[in-house]
Every structure is written in structure tokens, then in C-alpha cells.
Length: 133
Image (cartoon, rainbow, N blue to C red; front, side):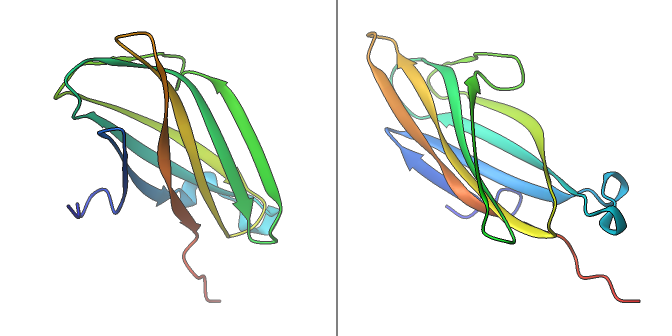
């Protein structure tokens, strides 16, 4: 289902990850080679049991094609448990040294029975608006 607020979505193991992204002009300094985006992620659990988000893995690419890998525990300092039928939202940010790029990744989650699953985060574009002088 297409969601106007969350234009990017991917479902893995009955868990849907939705993403919206916004360019933050007030935190960007194009003259200094700095662009900044905020991204809002909603994780929806359509499973019959809860899951816990343990780690995140990101691949970030800038407009020059440089690839950056980021990995860490939880998201925004939390390792949330998402109940069946519930969702978890958070907002984070990404700086780049180019006005375009993209991000994608995955979450490692713990199922109620103790199994580990990997849930995909859809690729989303980081695009600064064109500036004309």
C-alpha cells in the first residue's frame, strides 16, 4: 500500500519498514559542502508475536559514489520491543558532503521464540532541492 507520508516501504518477515525523508536546509551549508537530511522510520509488526530490534546496519552512498557502512546497537538509543499489530517510530539524520545520495539497510531482530531475523530497510533517496542564483 502506498502511503503519501511514507513513500518508501519494504516488508520482510511480516514486518514493514516505512521511510520518509526531508532535506533540512536550516542545518545544511552548501557553500561549506554540507547537506543534512532527517529521515522518519515507522516499523510495523504484522506478526503474531512481538519482536525486538537489536541492531541496525546502514549503507550510505554520496553523490560521488562513495559508500559508507554504519552498524550499531538499537536505534536512537533504544532497542524497542514491537508488539503484534503495533508500530515503532523514530527520527534520525544523515549528513553528506554532496547534495545527493541514498541510504538502505537492515535491522537484526529477535523473535519471541529466540530466533534472529533480518528485516530490510528500503533504499531511499537523499536529494537536496536545486538552488538557483
